[in-house]
Image (cartoon, rainbow, N blue to C red; front, side, top):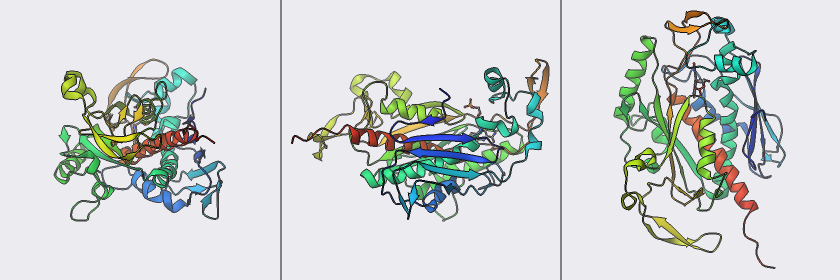
Amino acid sequence: MPGNSFGQAFRVTTAGESHGPGNLAIVDGVPPGLPLAVEDMLPDMQRRRPGQSKIVTQRNEGDVPEILSGVFEGRTTGTSIAILIRNQDQRSRDYSDIKDKYRPGHADYTFDAKYGFRDYRGGGRSSARETNVRVAAGAIAKKLIAAAFGGNVVGYVSQVGDILADVPDPAAVTLDQVEKLPDGEPNITRCPDPEAAARMVTLIETLRKEGDSVGGAAHVVATNIPAGLGEPVFDKLKADLGKALFTLPAVLGVEYGIGFGCASMRGSENNDAFVPGEGETPTGVPVADTASNRHGGMLGGISSGQPIVLRAAVKPTSSLPREQPTVTRSGEETTIKTGGRHDPCLLPRFVPMAEAMVAIVLADHWLRWRGQAPIEEA
Ligand SMILES: Cc1cc2nc3c(=O)[nH]c(=O)nc-3n(C[C@H](O)[C@H](O)[C@H](O)COP(=O)(O)O)c2cc1C
């Protein structure tokens, strides 16, 4: 009932609050024998880390995970993997105002409405701080799907405010394009269109100076995904991916392929024509490809073998260093100006979180697919 676990066969359970001693994940279901070390997690931890550039929160956290169990002599043992990330740079005094006042757009009021008592420091359990251990768990999932079927997951920022990236083929975007600009400098927005990326930096800096924030959208693309992962009814791949994305803070929309664009199309325009592919599926059926990918890589809740393409809309950061009308815990009108260190735009740090959740769902469904593989006759 308490909802701190996600996934069935690849199961991630987390605990921790923004300003507590640290965050913990227990990852269950990883098969034995997968080579694994903290170093496998560090690149994505660096991409998620606060303080990584001038356009994100300046909270300074090393975010180096400790693996407490489930790995021996550099390989997974098949038992539960516990990952601990300690908090180092909490400044709880910044949050005394939100103890008795509700931040508009944040979780302070709904936590009180549910629990009647909350750890208000930095947003407690509602804070995106909790996602650091998910990113560590996601690094394990990425390794597992790469080893199992060459699966790859890359996310990127495709919109900040009204600035849209021009990305002709989402499935062709590489991690290198997301992380580096053509001149080799770090791509601090994680937008693979360098011209749009430069305008995004200017917009985010301007809004930060004005004490405001801005929303946007990120794409996540999974490639080399075999046809056949997913379930036909309640655990459709698109349902589990949608839930995975909506468990991340600040997500207000998720769409696949053509997404909401399908609402204005005719069937003859929307259908992706099947064309002969190469080889056979593990169930002995000749592979079919599609000439286009408006369906976003899933049909009937099951992967089609085309790249899985999704887009998530992320709202502007709600904590603002400017006066906003609100109420106190005792129901009186007041105003709030939120101190503390906040991201003026959540998108650049959202990308590795979204990739991690997509990889976790794919690892989960691959393990489930393995468990349901057709029986060979004796
Ligand atoms: C990468 C990332 C960083 C975030 N940082 C902040 C922040 O600094 N300040 C803030 O008010 N909200 C931040 N949030 C969003 C809140 O955690 C979120 O809006 C809040 O928990 C309410 O949940 P909801 O927006 O999903 O309804 C962040 C979200 C993400 C994805």
